[in-house]
Image (cartoon, rainbow, N blue to C red; front, top):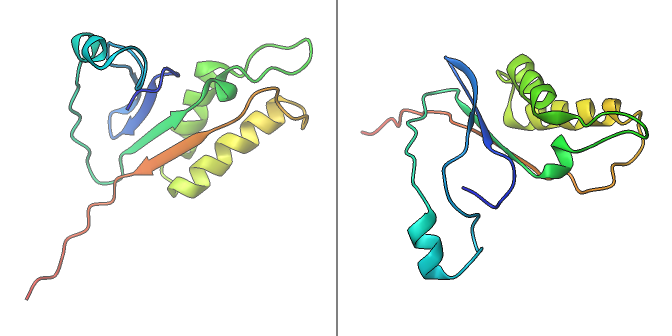
Length: 125
């Protein structure tokens, strides 16, 4: 999924990595132009894998006279907290940004979506 924001971060048994397919964000440009520029990547998720989507308000959160929260800090939080539930990981990201901001509100919105793949085996009789 692309909405013109930062790359998705995938946490798997191999570690964390950024995933950013080539092309425009969803809804940008005409339907025909969008179709010509977009690429589709398929990622097979395993039990416990996590995908984190976020807006630039997360990575660009900057305290007064300070540096942005940035991609590396975000990736580090995910790597440290990633085996938790999706809700707990989201909360860890929000807390890390809040701490970075010295508990002052950021200037931009913080939108975070955390998806955790839980393979459940159905008991069919």
